[in-house]
Image 1 (cartoon, rainbow, N blue to C red):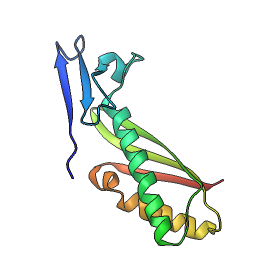
Image 2: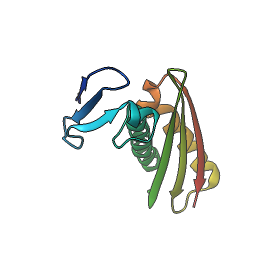
Image 3: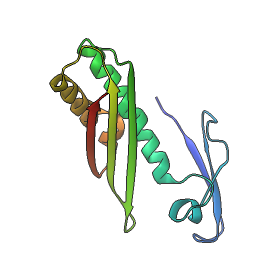
Length: 136
Protein backbone atom coordinates (compact mmCIF):
# COMPACT_ATOMS: atom_id res chain seq x y z
CA UNK A 1 0.00 0.00 0.00
CA UNK A 2 1.18 3.49 -0.80
CA UNK A 3 -0.54 6.78 0.08
CA UNK A 4 0.48 10.26 -0.96
CA UNK A 5 0.09 13.90 -0.16
CA UNK A 6 1.23 17.11 -1.80
CA UNK A 7 2.59 20.31 -0.31
CA UNK A 8 2.84 23.56 -2.26
CA UNK A 9 4.74 26.46 -0.66
CA UNK A 10 4.90 30.03 -1.96
CA UNK A 11 7.25 32.73 -0.69
CA UNK A 12 9.74 32.90 2.15
CA UNK A 13 9.65 30.73 5.25
CA UNK A 14 8.20 33.37 7.55
CA UNK A 15 6.04 35.44 5.21
CA UNK A 16 5.07 32.72 2.77
CA UNK A 17 2.24 30.22 2.93
CA UNK A 18 1.29 26.90 1.50
CA UNK A 19 -1.36 24.28 0.99
CA UNK A 20 -1.52 20.58 1.77
CA UNK A 21 -3.63 18.06 -0.12
CA UNK A 22 -4.05 14.32 0.37
CA UNK A 23 -4.84 11.53 -2.04
CA UNK A 24 -8.20 10.98 -0.32
CA UNK A 25 -8.97 14.73 -0.59
CA UNK A 26 -9.73 14.86 3.14
CA UNK A 27 -7.19 17.65 2.98
CA UNK A 28 -7.74 19.63 -0.18
CA UNK A 29 -5.56 22.72 -0.34
CA UNK A 30 -5.59 23.01 3.46
CA UNK A 31 -3.63 26.11 4.35
CA UNK A 32 -0.49 26.18 6.45
CA UNK A 33 2.04 28.87 7.22
CA UNK A 34 4.55 30.11 9.75
CA UNK A 35 1.63 31.45 11.78
CA UNK A 36 -0.19 28.08 11.84
CA UNK A 37 2.99 26.36 12.91
CA UNK A 38 4.52 28.76 15.41
CA UNK A 39 1.71 31.14 16.36
CA UNK A 40 -2.10 30.94 16.34
CA UNK A 41 -2.91 31.18 12.65
CA UNK A 42 -5.84 29.49 10.95
CA UNK A 43 -4.87 26.25 9.25
CA UNK A 44 -2.84 23.14 10.02
CA UNK A 45 0.82 22.29 10.42
CA UNK A 46 3.08 19.24 10.14
CA UNK A 47 3.10 18.52 13.88
CA UNK A 48 -0.70 18.53 14.07
CA UNK A 49 -0.83 16.09 11.16
CA UNK A 50 1.80 13.88 12.84
CA UNK A 51 -0.29 13.87 16.02
CA UNK A 52 -3.40 12.85 14.09
CA UNK A 53 -1.49 10.11 12.29
CA UNK A 54 -0.09 8.70 15.52
CA UNK A 55 -3.38 8.83 17.44
CA UNK A 56 -5.23 7.17 14.56
CA UNK A 57 -2.65 4.48 13.89
CA UNK A 58 -2.22 3.62 17.57
CA UNK A 59 -5.99 3.39 18.11
CA UNK A 60 -6.46 1.06 15.17
CA UNK A 61 -3.48 -1.10 16.18
CA UNK A 62 -4.88 -1.35 19.71
CA UNK A 63 -8.23 -2.55 18.31
CA UNK A 64 -6.37 -5.33 16.45
CA UNK A 65 -4.28 -6.25 19.50
CA UNK A 66 -7.43 -6.39 21.65
CA UNK A 67 -9.19 -8.60 19.11
CA UNK A 68 -6.22 -10.97 19.16
CA UNK A 69 -6.59 -11.17 22.94
CA UNK A 70 -10.34 -11.82 22.69
CA UNK A 71 -11.64 -8.31 23.51
CA UNK A 72 -13.62 -5.68 21.63
CA UNK A 73 -13.45 -2.08 22.78
CA UNK A 74 -16.61 -0.02 23.11
CA UNK A 75 -14.42 3.04 22.63
CA UNK A 76 -10.75 3.82 22.18
CA UNK A 77 -10.09 7.53 22.66
CA UNK A 78 -6.51 8.59 21.98
CA UNK A 79 -5.06 12.09 22.18
CA UNK A 80 -1.57 12.77 20.88
CA UNK A 81 0.70 15.75 21.44
CA UNK A 82 3.79 16.21 19.27
CA UNK A 83 6.63 18.35 20.61
CA UNK A 84 8.77 20.44 18.25
CA UNK A 85 11.84 21.66 20.15
CA UNK A 86 14.76 23.57 18.60
CA UNK A 87 13.90 22.40 15.09
CA UNK A 88 13.41 18.72 15.94
CA UNK A 89 10.43 16.54 16.74
CA UNK A 90 11.44 15.29 20.18
CA UNK A 91 8.35 13.63 21.66
CA UNK A 92 5.00 12.04 20.87
CA UNK A 93 2.74 11.79 23.92
CA UNK A 94 -0.18 9.39 23.63
CA UNK A 95 -3.03 9.63 26.14
CA UNK A 96 -5.49 6.76 25.95
CA UNK A 97 -8.88 6.37 27.60
CA UNK A 98 -10.67 3.19 26.65
CA UNK A 99 -13.88 1.30 27.45
CA UNK A 100 -13.21 -2.41 27.07
CA UNK A 101 -15.69 -4.84 28.62
CA UNK A 102 -14.20 -7.76 30.56
CA UNK A 103 -10.54 -6.78 30.37
CA UNK A 104 -8.38 -6.63 33.50
CA UNK A 105 -6.15 -3.61 34.12
CA UNK A 106 -3.09 -5.80 33.59
CA UNK A 107 -4.36 -7.17 30.26
CA UNK A 108 -5.25 -3.64 29.18
CA UNK A 109 -1.79 -2.27 29.96
CA UNK A 110 -0.16 -5.17 28.13
CA UNK A 111 -2.31 -4.62 25.02
CA UNK A 112 -1.73 -0.85 25.10
CA UNK A 113 2.05 -1.33 25.38
CA UNK A 114 1.98 -3.75 22.44
CA UNK A 115 0.05 -1.25 20.30
CA UNK A 116 2.44 1.58 21.27
CA UNK A 117 5.49 -0.47 20.32
CA UNK A 118 4.08 -1.97 17.14
CA UNK A 119 1.83 0.53 15.39
CA UNK A 120 3.48 1.52 12.09
CA UNK A 121 3.59 5.21 13.00
CA UNK A 122 5.35 4.50 16.31
CA UNK A 123 7.90 2.49 14.36
CA UNK A 124 8.42 5.38 11.93
CA UNK A 125 8.89 8.13 14.49
CA UNK A 126 12.43 8.78 15.70
CA UNK A 127 11.53 10.41 18.99
CA UNK A 128 10.53 9.58 22.54
CA UNK A 129 7.06 8.05 22.68
CA UNK A 130 5.11 8.04 25.93
CA UNK A 131 1.78 6.45 26.78
CA UNK A 132 -0.64 7.27 29.59
CA UNK A 133 -3.34 4.59 29.35
CA UNK A 134 -6.45 4.32 31.51
CA UNK A 135 -9.69 2.38 31.47
CA UNK A 136 -12.91 4.36 31.89
